[in-house]
Each structure stands twice: as C-alpha cells, then as structure tokens.
Length: 261
Image (cartoon, rainbow, N blue to C red; front, side, top):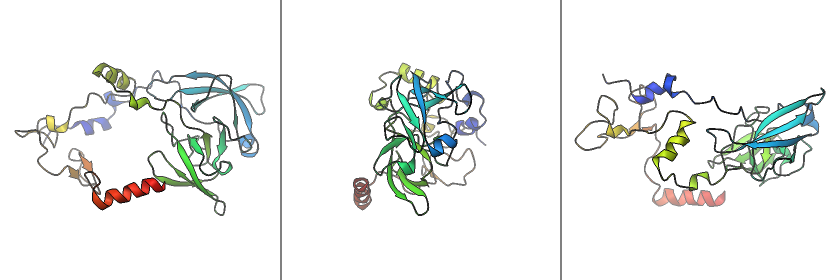
C-alpha cells in the first residue's frame, strides 16, 4: 500500500484551504426584489477595487433602500468600461448600457453579457472571470427560456428571468502577459490557495504517486483512469472519452462547429 497521495490530502482541507482572509466579499447582484422584477433601481459606483486572488476588479455600488431611509451597498464584478460616479440601473426596464443588469428576456439576441444567473435569483454564476463574456443566442417565449453561449463554448438553456450584466468582465488579456519568473507565480497563487509549485507525478517515487518510479520518467501504463477508481488510483485523465489532439475528420468537424458559433 502506497502513501496517501496529494490528491487525497487536498480533500481534507487543512493546509489546502483557500486563502480568503483579505478578500473583499462575495461579488454578486442585488437580492431580487419587486423593484427589479417590475421596474428598475438606480445605483452609483462609488469605487473600483482589487480583490486578492481574483483577476477581475470589483465595483462598489450603492443603492438607496426601496422603502427605508438607508443605503444598500453591493459588490459587483466590474464590466469593462465601468468608472466611479457612473450610474448603473438594475431591473426589467433598465436601458441596454454597459454595466446595467437586466433579465435575459430584455436583452436582444447576439448581445454580450457577463455574470449570468443560472437559476432565477442566484445573483450571478456564469462568465465572471476577467475578460469573460457570454452571448445571448436565442429566446423561446413559449416556455420562457433562453439559450446562451458560455465562455467555454458550451451552449446552455436557462430561464429568461435570469439576470445578466451587459458587457464583458474587466481585466481581460491578463493571461497574455508571461509570468517570466517563479516569483510572480508565487505571489499569484499565494493569495489563492496552496496549489503551487506542483510536482509532476512521474517525478515522484512509486510510493507517492501511481505515475512514480521507473528508470526514465514515464507513466508506464495508460494515463486514462476509470470514473469509479478508488482515491489514490484516480489520477491522470479521468474517464476520458478521447485523448490526444484532434486530427483528421474530428478536427474538421470541430473547426466547422467553431465557425458556426
């Protein structure tokens, strides 16, 4: 019996917990209320801030409370082009402007949106990374659903009452600048979680990883592994339908699918 491998130790938490102490808070839409369902609410962006461990900047937005003499402060994922002092409008009757939050049914087909809800009122889950956006493909008024294309290229059908922010998330092109040195990678992951540097399985001993050992660094067996493999064996390409780069007919089909979208 080998040692408990890294993938198993991560499940316990401990030193592998995410580093959330300095984070600014959950970035999400306003709680869905009567005002947003039927009209709109006006908020003002008071500040654009950096959130440690997140590539995208956050916008502090202040709304007046619908029926009390007080303010409601929200943290939104900032869209490209937002600025302090900008008015943002949230609700069914808001205009189609960058930074405004509308239900998908009020957004025309082909529009670029971000921070899209999956279920009505969940306050935004899709397309939230820096530079990410989703595209509204079509609406089906008969059953109240809409089709959106997610950043992964997958197309998803969601309720048309789900909200989304107009525009794409700020901070795009972040990955285009090379890291250049290990120190930059160290600081990048220090504020995220303990997942760097990552030792390859083939560089380990047989006791520490299924890919370890041997006179040359090689796996020695197929890198694919079945879905119901026990923990400790379940490393590599888990339940892979296919492996390797797309070639021949498969590549042509994939390219055609990309053009169609």
